[in-house]
Length: 580
Image 1 (cartoon, helix red, strand yellow):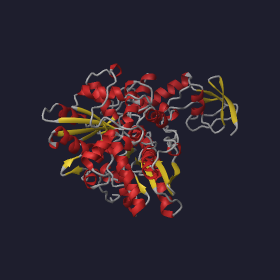
Image 2 (tube, one colour; image 1 turned 180 degrees about the vertical axis):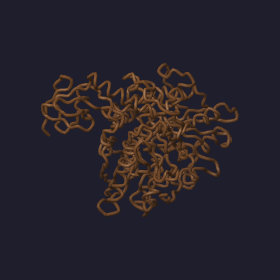
Image 3 (cartoon, rainbow, N blue to C red; image 1 turned 135 degrees about the vertical axis):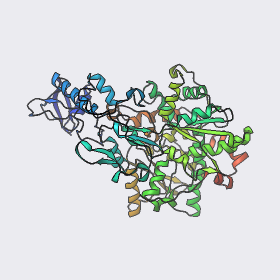
């Protein structure tokens, strides 16, 4: 594509002809403020914060929509523009409940940050009684407060375009416009799949995850409880962002140290359970190929995807693996295998998981997720909730030493670590399945064909003369497209990995917030995934079936993968759901 030359604030810049002014400004290090823009998803010019002056134009265009042109001269920082943006902010604040000191997004709120930058007067357009909370807390994973909503429509856009569900949208018109579900239904009455992508992109405190930290504080204070914690793979690559560290910093050692200082009795690694998942899911795949069964086999690690399948594509439920997710396997094994080894009554063990995902809050509550009436996991916290607990406890995160997880569930392979990135489950499974079938390891354990953030990735693997066709997708709109192609006969696969969140767990709904500017011009998914792939690359233990913890687990407790005891503890079933 041809390039054009233009000037921004007197600086000449050459950019592709299909760029917007916003993109062109970013190239020369000029940040134009935005509140509603979300790259590739929501370019609607609704907030009017990104207005600029363009020489010869009759009015001020919005930079997020206006395409560049050869010879264009743009100003982004004139007195008139600063005043216009300040007034816009003051108008937004006039219809915004400002309990900033008690808001979970305080100091992490895009509206608050811009209001401070532009010196906005929150009382300038004040009228009537102060806004009261307007809360929908019906859902198990989030709380919505429309008194803090600024109608940016980012949440609406990701729910529709990225996640297919489209269960929220603007209701009514004019001054009464608000974001809600159809017919003002509570969110839990809709086909929401609990992914939390709406929370991840919300610029204010209008959408927050349900805070379950008080349950954990209570358990930690209960001397009768043996409180065990385990973190998912991607948490170690994101938690540091909550403490000002660069995106993609691996803070595994400090995270373990912080968890110990919070008072947990045992700090384990959910990545060990990810290795168990590979043993169970890989064996299930081989059994279906050899003995017959619904094909393609589709992964079941992502609870948002599983609920999506139950709701929107129930005809594919026979294809979904019967394996529980690593979170649930972790809890089930802690309350059985570990409880037996440690001589602790499972009823006295309280299992906490740290997850990148708000759908995990739904998953722990599922009726199927128990063994003999004992719930696998008691509470699931997001990465953000863990950061909140660390700060509240006065733990200085960047001063912590690196520590290792406790034994029993403290060793994981590189294959377990990469579960957090889209394609990671598939790559981990293929490393083990290939070696089991062929009798020798893959020549290159880095299966690049299933890596990256493309909508749908495909690969073929030769298993001793049998070609296994695999596909990887993330984001539920992409998943829907893939399933439709399978239904129509356009595509044929043997094994499919689906993650609900675009890019996988590294972009989960419970991960640290990043401001719009960073989210729009940094590929968070790729930067965070780098940390997981780097950890895998640096390890000598890179295949799940070689994990010594697993060898002991199967030899002394579970027996064969997919055996009777494994099915009792580690497998489950799923059921079709009504849309409404």
